[in-house]
Length: 239
Image (cartoon, rainbow, N blue to C red):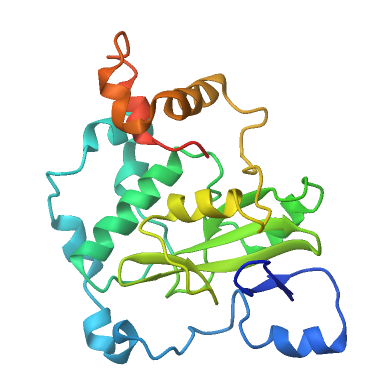
């Protein structure tokens, strides 16, 4: 059990620790045997929370750019992580779906990797290397795993009222990528994404350089990028 430097956030580490740490580790395990029983508006009424997933799949969202999603990932663009059970609202569904599709373009989203697999992968990674994966807990969508000074560590990424946060932290973000951007430039020491493709693809590096130089909001104004704009907008972040 370790704490981050900013918010005293509880996380799970595979590195052995003392008795006191072992006792506190049971307070907020990364992947408990059952769903966490938290008294939030979303969990107070199970009937409201258990929305029909098939009903969401039948809806047509005209405001989402599905063309590039299907071109780049085919059926993956219309799928969500298999562990997901239900959504509290249409807005939550759309936010998670957008986050999921953009994560597919990040190359550091490892999908259904378990905590043990993530910690083995990060065991020899540099300090601060991190990845995103599906949470093993059915009421949590994503988990952050990273290499800390105490060894590979995992912490749940919570989504409440359409805001993302690390478990145990009161700091919230409108998107998962804003959360990652904050913690990569803070004293929490997240540094480099642990990508599935190593070395990183050149086109991904170029996309990140374009966004860092011009800003995602200005990509459409750059001449000569007509064939690349969809690719750049698919993942408009510098991480």
